Length: 230
Ligand code: CDP
Image (cartoon, rainbow, N blue to C red; front, top):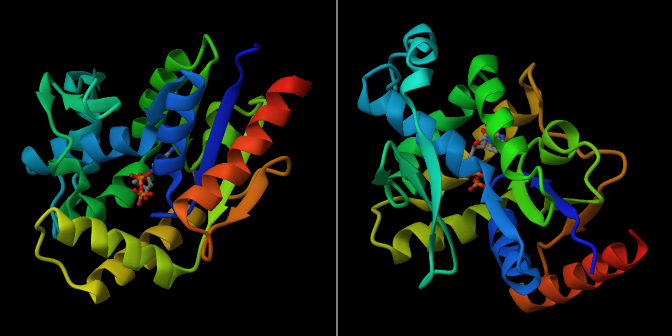
């Protein structure tokens, strides 16, 4: 069967990574969570004091980009690659609300995007890849055989993210999560470099009223058809 490139873009917390992981497992493709890479760079900037709630020292971050080494290491128990920043597993830290609050500002820096997009293109060069993010179908793989654009109401998305974070023990309020979801949507879709928008040839999926199984069934049908036609 032909191996294709599947690009999944969409607003924050639309369940892109859940679908992407499931697809990658089913098809035996590589899964790349491009958001994890922006989150890891943000964590690095926070740990070095370049970026905090009150400081935005993007020049220092840019100067130190060469010292950031990112790697996905496959965890067989979890079934996906976990993010390592300079050799350390940072999977838990990068999902915190503190990182979520700063990541969109970091992701708007062109120098950061340039470095990460290059790495993402290398990871997907051999096809057989499912990558999710904000600019995968528009910038990273504009020629991807299949592009999906995921959406859902802000309330639903915030509820899902709230459940995810409280389940793992984070002390967060629903209101601050909702604010963060709306704030990131705004920055991500209005930034100058690679803003989030639906590519003309992307298929839009609104999953506000779909459960995970229903959503996966719909998407798998689309994927199988596209692989047959490619
Ligand atoms: O988990 P969630 O869907 O909320 O976001 P994510 O995929 O982990 O991405 C975190 C942030 O990274 C986004 O809000 C964007 O600011 C940025 N990002 C980006 O600019 N381009 C990408 N390809 C992926 C993420």
